Image (cartoon, rainbow, N blue to C red; front, side, top):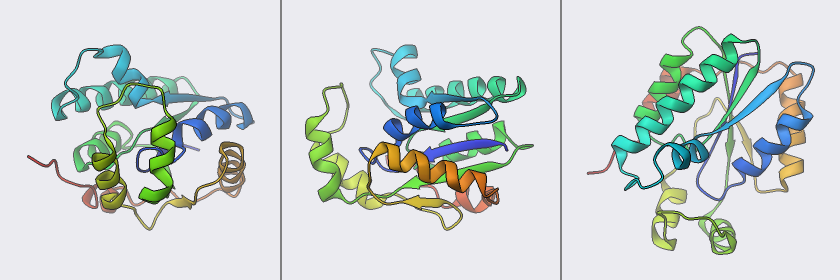
Amino acid sequence: MGVLVLTGPPCSGKSSAGRILTQLHSPEPAIYVSVDALFDQLLPNSDRGPRDRMLAYEAAHALARAIFDHGHIPILECTYARRDQRASLANAFDDAALHLVEFVITAEQALPRFRSRDQETDLDEQSLRAKVESFPYTPDALRLDPSTPGDHARQIQAWLNADPSAIDRDRWVANGLAWVQ
């Protein structure tokens, strides 16, 4: 199957769906890797700048590569808005299919979710709105509108069962955003 990548703006439902999806996935075992959770473990006192963010992405990709090499399906979850983040993943899996699921959300839908979170974040409402409104979607992905995590997981599983085509990784990487100085 390859690698499953759950991407989209913050507060779009990626994490919740990813955790449920690992329980639904069969017949091959799948292991969920959250880049943000790994980031928090590796760099708990980070300023969350581009350098530290890339370290977290690269660590997640190395972990996912080991999972893949041991015969499991990695389910990677994070925003993947930046070109460098996307390129790092494409390079880590240059010999495997990348299947991309993009979670779509508007700022008006994301803000209430953001306000109800109790986890630490470097986002505020203004930066969340900017990230949601500038997210670089790609035509090669399965796109999911807001729904329940269980519905998202079932939609993804049905899509995977239909043996979808892998993304055009060069187009996906090129469509990513550059870091803002």
